[in-house]
Length: 369
Image (cartoon, helix red, strand yellow):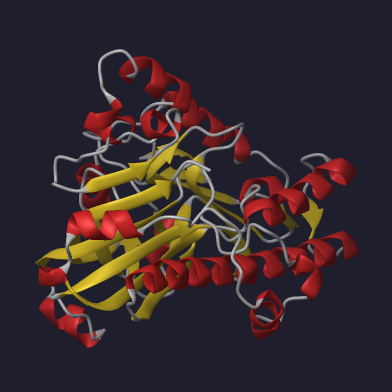
């Protein structure tokens, strides 16, 4: 689906797209220096800019296109826990106290990621709010056995998927930029850009470290070990084809395997990017199903006819740990688009090959604090 000469949307005629998101994509493509803009199948409206999109410029970087959660992304671990021995009720009871500040060796962990000690804080090692989560999954189906086994994946082991970002650090970086420049872009030859890029890259490493610590905390609760299989960023700006590629809610197609979750009530897809047509989508992929309803709409539509207890169990037999009464409605599966349509659109565009489907078993968002 092509909108004009520098805007392209990866979507079939059968898929639903919000007109507001399309308008935001077209408007953003008019920013100075933006030469290409791509909307992915999970495209949906954000606060002035679309989510599920990628933008390329040879001359300018726009921090507000990356957003306030620099480095937000997903990491997937294969644990040493056999799925057949994963006792659901017992595990749910053990997963407590994970909102409290992490008490480990902050200074050493920061140094290992080449991060200064002043980036310490109480949020390191915590999931955060919104659509962030930690989720235990099982392998449902293997579609491409060769790729699956090439990555030393084991269908009999539990998986842990962590979705989180740079918490307040990314917010502070964006607010500082807006204070000085509003939403103005930065010339990539300027000192201002060099300063932003340095802080951006620190936030990226901080977000990766945060996901690692979150995983360690969950696994420690269960006395389990794990091997990280992938870690991908959804919000970033990186060098690309002698220019700069902004991704806002978009997974990279040039970093190996990608995990694309639907919602806590639908399957997650493990996919392998295909390179032949990758440039059509600016080497980017959908990062999930994409919202169908705003948070306020979700609460309004579901609040009077759906019980919280119904949202704590999924149609797939999974459990949801979310003791925030507003968040559990805002993040209900009904608030998201159909993940199968998103995946089908990516397949039709020759952007991915499905490797496996993963079943959510426990989705952890928050306990009461």
